[in-house]
Image (cartoon, rainbow, N blue to C red; front, side):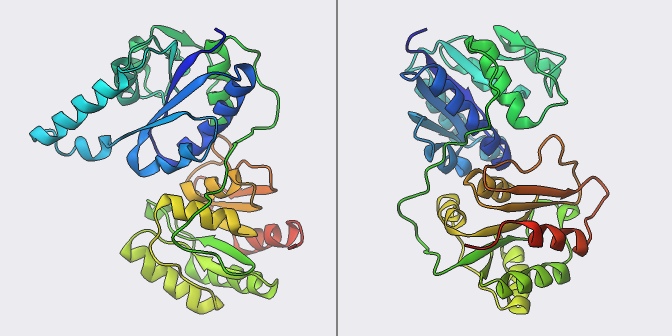
Length: 321
């Protein structure tokens, strides 16, 4: 394949989409003239668009459609997406998600669907939908699993380099970071992931003493209330509601990031920000914080990290420039 045409299927969640970005960089190194398209949930489409190696992003709204299957509008939208997927003939439709839903959508494109084998995949039934399958250890980090699967199916050597996320910060944003700042990301999709507010305030105060203005990120109304309490306690600031594109611009402009195990924390690390990931309900071994800027993950399943553990990491990171 001198100029392969490749469709990446990695639809959600945000952290998973971020973890797949180095695969694009790997493919570009192996095939500089490749055409790489990406099928992704519309709410996360801003992320692959920030990688210059992605030619076309195809947004989908499966999370919304699956709740509206009794309506004609949902079925029309799905038919339109299928038609758009089939305007291109691909040499490889690479399902990096490994779920039944992603495998079904991979089959809608024109080209051979490829993915993990039954022993490697998250939902074994999905493996039956692929034209080609490859084994990848389930004990590896998600970033490495994606990279190895692509190498196996596209025929280039397994990558041994440091992951290159390839992100280019947005040139324009609806909200500008003013001065030296640090981002705090205390909100997550599940209450089990939450870290106590009082501890966030201590972290924010220390960052403030380092000369960094704490910016507390939020996404829902309930999270906004929480963010405002934390910001008030550490003399920080709460930005207005921002879409994914604008949060990406904010994170890329900060000097430090401390966040829960959530997509924005992974995105910050991918931008090369010194990032600390706080894990309260998940083991970081298979999906810990990865990035080139000095990162650390602390905590685990049923192991809520102490304030002392997090503060030690805050102090250990490189001095603020």
